[in-house]
Image (cartoon, rainbow, N blue to C red):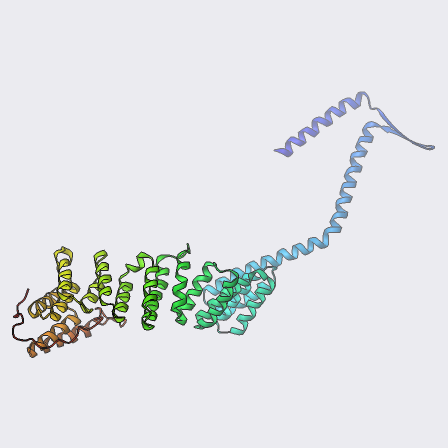
Amino acid sequence: MRALFFALLILVAAALGTHYFLDEPGYVLFAYGNYTIETSLIVFLLGGVLAFIVMYLLLRLLAGVWAFPGWMRRARKQRLERLARRGLDRGLTEMAEGRWEKAERLFTRAARRTDAPLVHYLEAARCAHMLGADDRRDLYLRRAQEHEPKARLAAELTMAEFQLERGHAESARAILKQVETRDPDHPYALRLRALAMQRVGDSAGLFALLPRLRKLKDMDDVALDAFETPAVRDEIGRLTKAADLAGLDAAWRALPRYLRERPALACAYVDALSTLGQTARAESVLRNALRHAWHDTLIDLYGSMPHQDLPRAIAFAERFLRERELERNAALLLALGRLCRRERLWGKARGYFDASLASQPRPDTYRELGDLLEQLGERDPARHCFRKGLRLAAEGVLDNGQTLYLPTRRRAPELPPPRKGDEELHTV
């Protein structure tokens, strides 16, 4: 449309010019010394236009000749860049399909054709790592840093990944320690460092790193829990082994509330307090945890741990029987049976064991009932319970080797045989 408009404008201008020049052609005179040049105005204008066009084309030709080498260089560079991109795409495809050798060749060939070979060398290093060629892998990572000095962090993180995959957690930890000196808050470096600490068993270091991990925006709850629960449990175990009660209390208070309410960690803390002789505090912590949130693991520990006041412990556990959803809870009934047995309430203990088995047969419940019956002199029923418990334990092993039922955390202490005057047998 624009071309048509300009063509129409030129035609109108030519028509107007022709109209005026026919009536008055005019003339132009050039004089230089004894020489004069005289022509009509229309010829002069046409000659000027023609001379301008010739000069313009001549200048364009000279500029093109001058810029031809640079144009050739740019064209060659663009062609190499296209080949490099194509090689990168093909290399990624081959790598995704598991053809590591071919992918490595494509990446290294493409790296020589581009001015930014960082990605190519990193992917080539990954292929060499998958092939077990550690020398070539390290060479590619060095070349990546040589071509892009700012890529040192990327190369070090990649090397840390490779070391972790190889099982060299200590080497990865040393690399990530150097990264921390330059970029202490790098999110991915923190995650890799936590994984390395977990692999080498540095529970204290991982525990100290947890607050920084919680601040990471890209860390979901599942990934964070994979670090938090083992780290806290290991730290509790380390402090318990060192008999550091003050450090244990400080570490527990430093935990967020949601971690202190986690059943597995609450059990670990209660176990630690019991081991360090803090039975009353352990019982108090466990009761608070049960009041806040019910969990079978907590009540299982409650029934197995030592209590200074057994009647009070039994009364506390029996309160949960008033709740409809817990009145047939096998773990609660088992815990009550254990507590009653230790309080020499033989009939109540047997009744709770029977009720627990009626709700959910478990090997540890059969064992407790068998021990009680054997203690009471009923050897044949006791042997029957032991056989049923062993059979149930054998049948309760899954294909992956995991057991269907939680094992008893701590066996109740052995009790003397019943004496005259103890409560007579009855069931609830």
